[in-house]
Length: 419
Image (cartoon, rainbow, N blue to C red; front, side):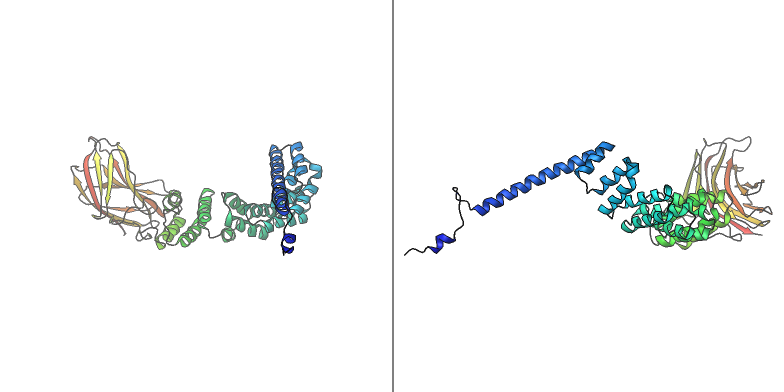
C-alpha cells in the first residue's frame, strides 16, 4: 500500500516547481531593496537641498527628512522668529547636537539677556561634546561677564586640547588679571602650549615671567630632543631678545634651566666667572651666554673643539669693518676685570686690526682693547656703575695706511677675571 502521509506533508508548489514560501521571501527582499533605494534617493535629495542653503531649499529638506537635527537647526537661521523653537526641536531630536545647544545659549545671553539659561545651555553643550568649541564658548562667556574662577577653569580646559593658536586665550587671561602666577597656574603642562606661552610673553612685554615657563617646558620634555622643542629657534630667539634688551636676570634663569636640563653644556656664568667656553672646547651654541660667530663676508670662521681653537681666515676681500664673534657676559657694576687671550698669526702682522670691544648694555660708552696681536695679550677694563651686562665682541677694522688683511689668525683661549 502507498502511504498518503508523505504527499500530504509537502509544501504547495507553483507550476514551475518553486515552493510558495520561497517566492514570498524573494518578493519581500526585492521590495526591501526597492524601498532602500528610494530612501537613499530621498536622503540624497534632502542633502542636496540642505547644501543649497536657502530658505526654500532648507525648508524642503526638513519636509523630506524631518528628524534630521542639523536640517532643523539650520532652518532656524532662516526663520528668526521661529529660531528658538526650531533649535529646541533640534536638541530634542538629537541631545548630542552641541552646536544647537550653543546657539540656544547665544540667543539667551545676547538677545534674551537670560544669563542663567545661557550658562545652562553652554554647559549642556560641554557635557555632550568634550571637544574644543564648547570649552572655548564657556571660556568666552565667563570672560565677558568677569567671572574669574569659572573663566580660568574653562580657559585651562581649552588650552589642554586646543588644536589652534592659544594666543587668544592668553590674551584674555592677561585682560582678566595681571597676576602672572595665577595665569601660569592655568597653563597646562603641555609642551606645545608652554612653548607658545613663552613666545607670547616675550612678544607682549612680559619678559620677567618667561623663565618659569621655560623651566616647566624643559621638565616636561625630559629626555626629548631639545631641537624639536624650540631650543635652537624659539628659545634661542627669546634668549637673544632678552639679552639685547638688557634683561639679564630672566635670560640667566632660562640659561640655568637649559643647563640643568642638559639642553646646553656651557655652565651658568656669573659676575665673578662671566665668560663661557673660553677654551673653545665645547661646540658653540651661538645664542645667549656662548660665542656667536657672525660669519662676515670675506672672513671664514672655523671652530675646532678637538684643538680648542677658533681660526679666522681673511680673504683680503673682507669689509673694512666687521664683527667676527661675540658673547654676552654678566659683570659686576663698577667692577674691574682683566681679559687675557692667546692668539697665533699666520701671514698677518701687527697691527692686525682685530680688537676686543665691550659694549656696556645700558651705558653710552663702549670699551676697547689693544690689538689682538700685541705682545701683552691682555686688557684691563672698568665697568660703568650702572652696568651689569656686557657684550664682548671681537671686531676687525682695517688699520689706517694698511691694506685689508690676508691670511689667518688662530685664537686658542680667552679668559676674564675680576680684579
